[in-house]
Image 1 (cartoon, rainbow, N blue to C red):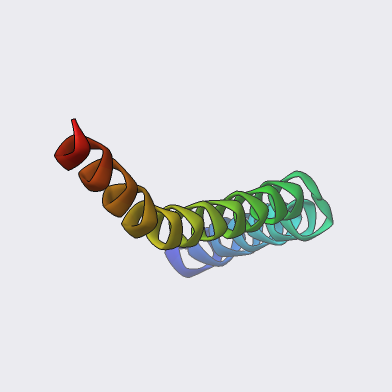
Image 2: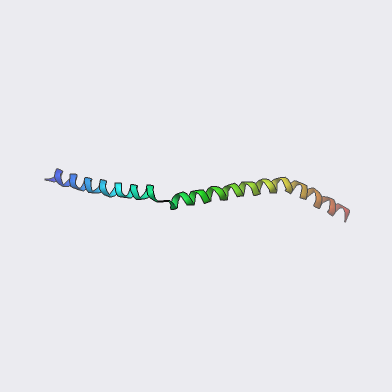
Amino acid sequence: MRKAARRVALLQSLRIDAARIKRFVSDEQGVTAIEYGLIASLIAVVIIGAVTLVGTDLNAVFTTIGNDL
């Protein structure tokens, strides 16, 4: 009797897991969140690159202004 009870419990667990997986695969909110995350990281990389390139020039400009004063 114990084996039968274990099998029933295992089958119920598998059905529940299959339903969860089906729901997870059909859910598009996760995909949207990943897309927004990728867009945000791309924007961050562009900002970091721009600040790095412009930062050196700004440092030189402010150094020149500071020396002239």
